Length: 134
Image (tube, rainbow, N blue to C red; front, side, top):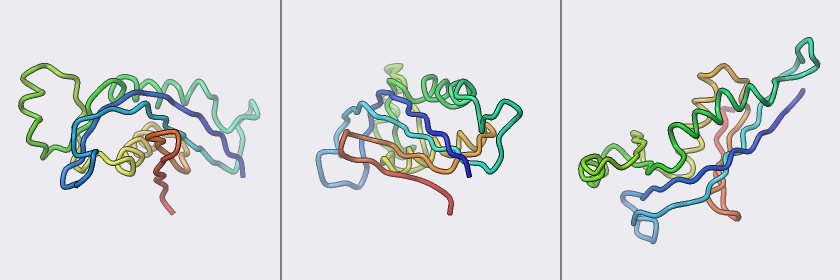
């Protein structure tokens, strides 16, 4: 079994609904997504996948959709105000926890045809959440 990993740094903001702690307020993170791809065979170049392909398919998606944006739940009552102000947003159906953001990136990698094994989102240098299927 072969595995390749790529780290993608990005900045984002969020807040958590139904949460009784500091994260209930709008705040930001310097996050890092760690994408692990896995497969049993290599291509004719001897690669599971070219790191450039990960960049084109996932890093660019993160930069265009999540980097320097507020990631908020579609039920967040502040959404209309931020939309009126023209703030850069990415709206998801669930609370924008590290777990749900890791799952979001995993699903994007899968949709872009990558053999993704797992995605970890480092919200801080000491805290991460990982999503994988199986």
